Length: 340
Image (tube, rainbow, N blue to C red; front, top):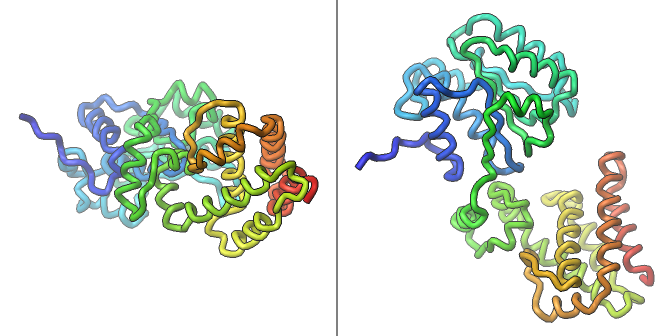
């Protein structure tokens, strides 16, 4: 029986099959010159990109992993490899400019300084401006020899179709949620359910970080405060103060951002909307049967109105990043509980 080749150490388990496939393709001389790794934040896209770049440029690879000892590996370890280019927004900018792409383009037309293989890493490729995208497209259409491009983004729809069509599509999110949740369970000392996984957008690394920062305790307190407002009879005297106080305390330590809080409340309202409509859902907030029964008695229009207000708040934050998010969230809550 043939044994499976040794996998590069430290790779997250859900990335190993993809890494094995890509390194095999390179060894056999059929790896695509451009790869697009897509998946939500917290799936290890950067780790896969860097490990693949190390392997591609390793002088003496062992099976399907970089040796870790050659000059190229040592340069990678020091983050100073002259033939591995990482393209990211400049300084405090939030987008990747065309100048960044052109600079890399000028560098890769010549032979490598220490390695015949050159690698261009573009994390958050969706941050490229239109001009940068067009400049990259020209390079991808006529790539220099021995140059590999590794792009990452949350989802392919965020990139121009012409870019996507010239890349090997690699979806690291194409893993069973149960398997990812099971991995998280092994890393923490609590019982973490697949239903709760939805709170972290089914991202194992975000889940691990959130659990370690006490996010599940915050979720329980948030659920209790929001439900007290929603399930108050007629909401004439809805107990809004506990929720406001919870939000103020949460902003002090900044372990959980106000943006995350808004997303959590939004997810809770989505669950409540489904229960009020008589639909089933994952119940990621672990609502009890008595709570679900009370929600089922409420008018679904109330939940839909709150859902719309939260959506508008999200859009407002995008348009005005400097806005007082906490104050605006409190406004939305007060609007939902007009008698408070």
